[in-house]
Image 1 (spheres, rainbow, N blue to C red):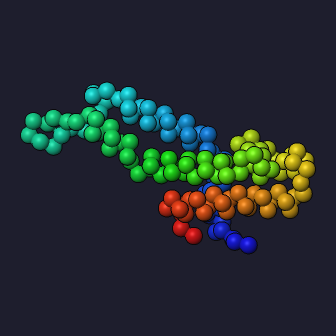
Image 2: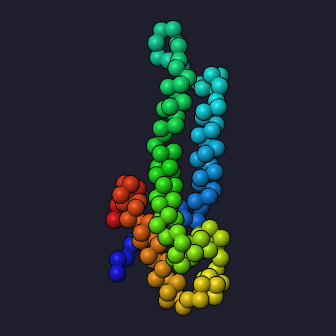
Image 3: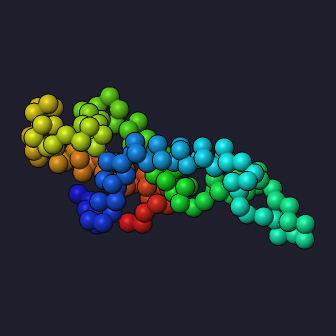
Length: 140
C-alpha cells in the first residue's frame, strides 16, 4: 500500500472538495480578463510613445502561473471523475467530495463497510495524486 504525506493528501482533498468553487472562480477570472476594456488594463508599453497592446496584455494575464496551476488541478480532478465514472467508487467520490455527505451516510447508501469506505477513498486520492504528479503539481 502506498502512503502519501499528510500535507499532499490534504492538498488533494482540498482540490476535490473545492472543485466546483475553483472552476467558477477560474471561469470568472478568465472572463473578467477577456472582457476588460483598454482602460481597465493599466500596463503601458515601454517605448517612448507609451503604446500598449491590450491583446498581448490579456494573453499575459491569462497565462499567469497561479491561473495555469488552478486549471491543471481542474483537469486532474476532471480526469479522476472520468476514471471512476459509473463505478461505486465514482459514487463515493460524488457523495464525499461534491455532496459532502458524512462517512456513515455514505456507507449506508452504498452498502459498504467502513474499511471499504476508507480503502476506496484512499484509492481515489492516490489516483488523483498520480495524475497531479504527471501534471507537475506535486512531488512525491
